[in-house]
Length: 331
Ligand code: ATP
Ligand code: FE2
Image (cartoon, rainbow, N blue to C red; front, side, top):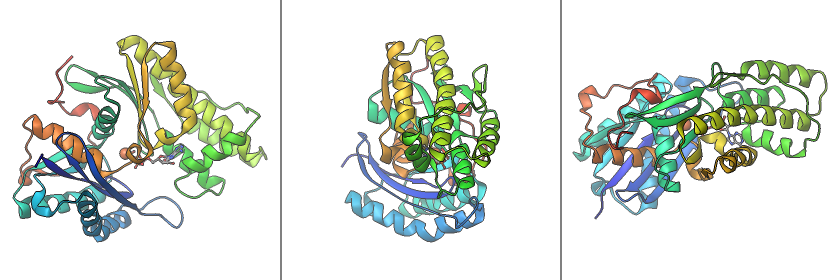
């Protein structure tokens, strides 16, 4: 039997368990999300959700994959970055499983996992990655032995901006899909702050201005259209500069906001202008899920990465560029 890894992801509001084989086949990928009645997520409430639901989600992932606990060779978990209580609840499950089954434990950087699952799916070897989600907005490229952040948000993440705007206009969380749907009907562009500073972007001014336009009675469809065009245009500019500077030949779009078709279209334009290949991670692998943790765990394990349970504390502020990428040849 090939190597089988169980990956647990629980950095924020969702808990996921995925089973992946050593040759990169996703055998299962199950998750469940806390949905707050109102307002944002409370970290303790989310961590309780993970501890309560985790065991059932793990069992479901094993059943769907057609494997038993005794078939698991490796346990990978999302070690950071994320909300402390959620990370700890997930790490506790991972440690106890690794000890009980007597198999190695691997701690995975969540952002790196979003990149690696995209490379697995696309076959890309060395892309410029646009990683966009509720908590992160980064343009990343591999250099030396790290995934370097070429540009990022200076304040709030793009997904967070969309979710807060959605809350203001009465949409359900997460609001990204609702905003995308409204934007498709939009026709009139209303000017919003376009804020690119060097390689970095900023979205908080746009959120304030969008709130004002909404209170002035601008049609929701036009507002969503204007927000998407401006926010995605900013990302396109940074991506274009990153691809021109690094001379890489692939662009990968990953993270929950990668589900947005319009963003994919705009970045396809950037790729075409630079003769680069383009791939958007498919919806089931774009957001937070355990398969990306399992696959990255396999890569780390294959490079000899081992984590003692005693040293497996979580890293809530672990940046993408703070991990040596031992499984890739340095460039
Ligand atoms: P991370 O921990 O990596 O920051 P996350 O916890 O935000 O991730 P993801 O599932 O990666 O979780 O991303 C969720 C985000 O994706 C939410 O902000 C949501 O609104 C956004 N999103 C989902 N679908 C769409 C869409 N079609 N268009 C725009 N945004 C979307
Ligand atoms: Fe994520």
